[in-house]
Length: 142
Image (cartoon, rainbow, N blue to C red; front, top):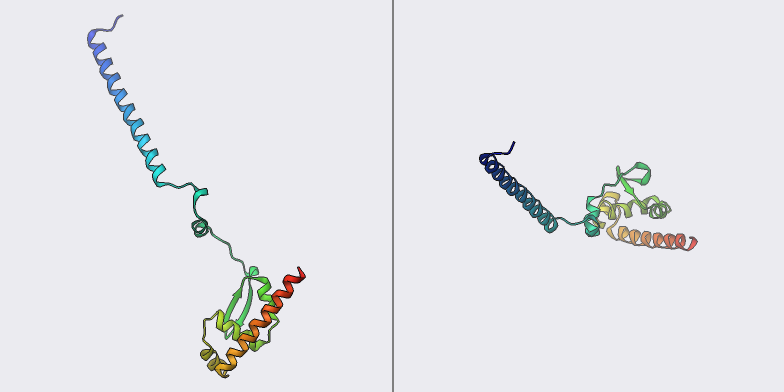
């Protein structure tokens, strides 16, 4: 059986509508790809500082060396630095850790340990020199 004129007309109308729909879908797809190209950045093109913010690092107790200063636990991540700090006397270690890790001034440290501000300053400077020597020795040994 041959299709009637009416059926041919319906088929042509359907074909025409179908082609428009497909062209619209293709057009929308291309627009979306263009939008993504303009907005999105490849992971490998991201600056290192942005990648660092996206990273999540696991922290374990064994990764740190802990020191007790005035009842507060101070954690030091670097093993070489922690070893150098261990070689200081208890008083010098406390002064150094209070200054750098607890953000205390020499005056505050002096009040806390009942010593002069200048004593705290001299002790801290001496401790830094000792740590510097110890770290240099460790680097020369390696």
